[in-house]
Image (cartoon, rainbow over all chains, first blue to last red; front, side, top):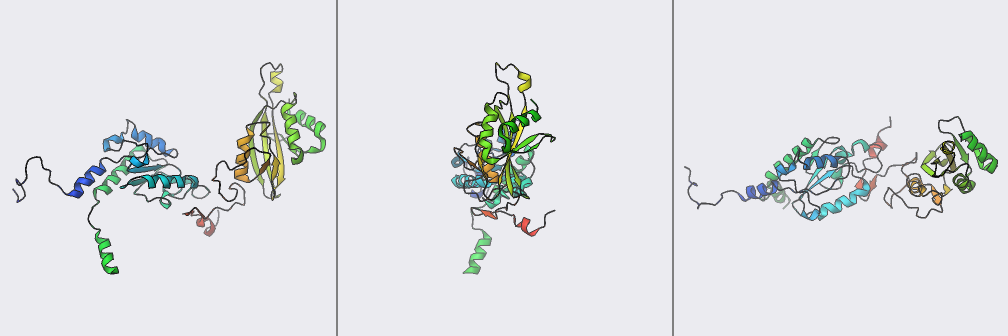
Length: 172
Length: 177
């Protein structure tokens, strides 16, 4: 029995604030109802019963960017769509995450060389957290991408970033 | 009616307006003078021997070597109710109209075949052919402020669009295969 045991009342959970917040966030990543092309069909399959992304707490596809945490960019992003996509991203409340799903979204895909109208990677428009390659990716791949995003959220901290602290010291 | 018969009728009616005819192609076509194209189009639709009541497709073509732009119209006749000679009237035909590449203008046929409306807008968007008399000739696919006509053979890709970089420097620095 260590020094901390048996010190607290019944019903009190002992944890770090980081752990608690991250636990909440990673298990309720609500994606936005947003599909651009064929990858969106796979995204719908992920949302349906066979693959069931609801097991990860991410099945509540919100119809408004103001209620969503995650934007799954599923499909070819054209220059014409990029302005809309950026607006939707800006309308999402923090913390917000982006999954780039499929070859087109990652780097232009089959349109990289001869597609005059395709953005050569959605990371030129919005910051991307997880890249899910494939054309289109299997639903399992998107679930894997979601789990990697959960890993990322799990390791976030509200403390000062040690690297930025060092930078500040160096600059001052 | 065969394509040769249609071609002969057109030559009889319009003479000089039919500048060329290619009958041994898989899809036989005639070349019509752009200045008289509206008149010929009306004949193709309204004459009972032609009765082309359907514009199947409008394709824009870039004849870069000749410094020309063109449009190819594919017509089909769907027999209407009450038509006696259903079998004879179910025929195809194609017409090519060519215009100058530096100042491309063609008369619209959107008032004759409503299907031409969006087709002409697309041809304008992609190739820059201006269809005179079109009710709403705006870009249909590209953004309104897009520069250039993407499907022309000498089109140059944008290096950036509204601050989004295009990585087409790759195209400039690497030779085409």
